Length: 281
Image 1 (cartoon, rainbow, N blue to C red):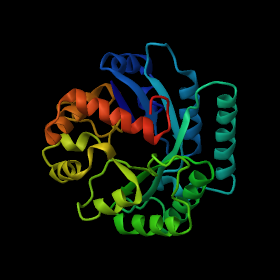
Image 2: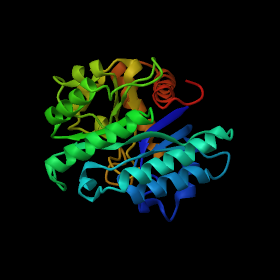
Image 3: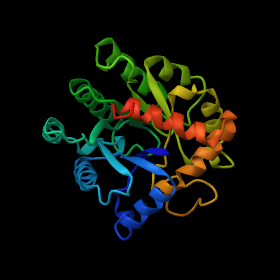
Image 4: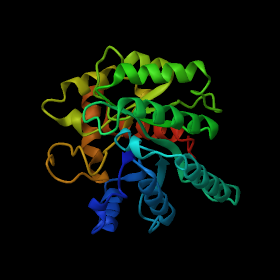
């Protein structure tokens, strides 16, 4: 069984055939999917979708809440309050005996490739969302592109101020999503208590750096993702990505780690359950 730990199934790219996408995911033994979000409207959509759940045969859906660095400029004084309200509503559901669906804050972080929001604004919003994660004891999903040093600087400052912690001693702080950065900084994220997520790029011809990073990531810190509808793995590159394609990422990860497909599926699912404090962890 597989856990797609980073997807955007709420995206409009799936509006016409979302049910079929979920059925294909189930057929590929993807039993759980985490919906990562990019702003308040996206968070609302993902939360609503996770609550719907669809048919019992579909994968179980969970969601994060957060502002992607591209959207940092749209963060305002009410954003944190809206996120807090959704978390409070979800925790009332849990107190009533239902399983929580909000399991993380993210994706948050820094992206200096397109610089769609000013760097200073990105850092400020990143920090404020780390504070929310600490307040509600939720792991974080980190987006990082061409900004590893500043990302580490923000995280180190947050750790000094006690923001990088979890109430469960065996639970990691979060995950660095779609890791493709230098091997030189990988130990810094591991030492801080992060898991490392990998997706389609490990199957690309030019994905050698990501493959080296995966090889250097301890198995108990490894997560697998699709980032659907983006980053479609080979042999479907150029098409819309979906959670059923997670198995192709898993096959490449198994090859790199010299493990069976079953071992990769079992351990990465176990890791995701632990990170998001879900039943079975």
